[in-house]
Every structure is written in structure tokens, then in C-alpha cells.
Image (cartoon, rainbow, N blue to C red; front, side, top):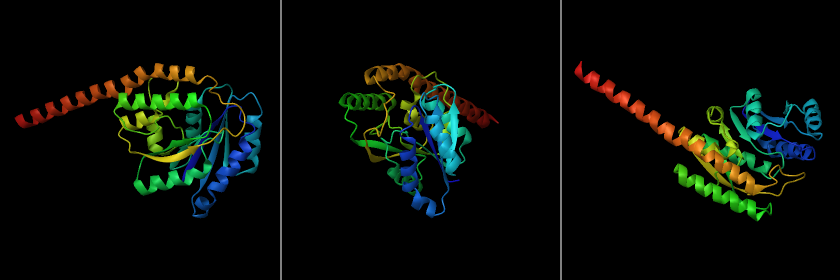
Length: 259
């Protein structure tokens, strides 16, 4: 299996069918070249018929794998559930609302193959969703995170990402108690030494249904709560560990010189 596409779904019943149609159309040439793929749909405790739509799709479409949470657990839990059943050498995360265009998936894959990158992220160069407040808050948070973590990425928060599987596994093994860890994916990748590439994409309007981010200002403030946790895990603690390892290596070298 070459590619596993993981899609957390919460109250997305109207989006399941068009999502699958567009992914499969976008990957027709990919599959024609002999690359197998799967689409893992994780029903995250939906209150509508999302779970039923996912089960129906899995029963008739060999590409589709159905997973379910009994209650809403969030995007990152959806990724972990999806990864636990994924078989792909590469893993791609996207949303069910079609704001990230499935037609861009082959470009992310080609970029990973051509550059050898561990992680390829679509950065949202053009926004068509219409919420200026959400755009401004997103750009502001990206700028702040770049500054704090010594990075120069164009869009840290985009969730449209293709990973080499070991990279994704390492990132999801974080230890901090985050509210919204999805904002820190590229920060974790950078801290672990994985190579990152970004390609420009268009961020579309939601196809159907309502966004789970009904209060973008509150959502951004909650993300600020996570920054000290990430600073500890990905800057201060890693520096301390690297310093400890460096000291141990120096002691070993010194001892070796005495022998």
C-alpha cells in the first residue's frame, strides 16, 4: 500500500459522497500507475448520519476503511485511530469539508518523491472561505509560532499534509497535554529533525454543513494556551536533553583519551 488518506469526520453526512468521488477521481492516474491507496474515514462521534454514510461507502468501495468513535474526541484522536489501521508507506491528512482540494493530493505526493521530504504541507496561499477574522487569526498565530520556534514557514496551521509514515508516527507520540495539537504538527516535525516542504494551495469554502470552529477567536485563544506546553516539549526540554547527551559524549571522549 502506497498511500493512506486519513479523514476525521464530525457531522459531515452531506460531504462524504462528494469527498470520496473527488479523491478517487484525483487519484485515478496514481492508481493507474500501480499505486494502491486507501481512504480511512473516522466518524468522530457524529450526531447526524455520518457514520451510516461511512459504513455504506465501506460496504461498496474497496478503497474505503470505516472507523468509529463512540463520542467526539477531536481531530488528533481521529488521526491516531486512522493511523492504527493504516497500511500506507505515506499518510495524508485532510478534512471532510472539501476546503482542502483532493485534486492537490497528487502534487503533495510528487513533491515528497521528488524532494525526499519527510513532510509536505499545502500552505493556503489563497483563501476563499470568506471569514476575514479567521484568516487574520490564522496568519497571526502562524507568525507567532514561527517567531517562537525559529521557523520560517508560510502557513504552520494547515492540516493538509502528506507524511512519510515514520514521521507521522513520531509526531503523534507527543507527551504534552494539548488542547489543539494540530497547530503544532510542523513544529514537532522540525524539532525531531524531519525535512519539510510546502506547496501553495487554494483553501476553498466549505462544501456543506457547519464548521466545528464556530468561534475562531476563542479557538485561537485556546491555541495560545498550548504554546508554553510546546515550548517546553520542543525547545527547552530538547535543548536540555541534547546538552546532557553532549556532556556525556564529552566525558566519554575524555575518558577514552586517558586510556
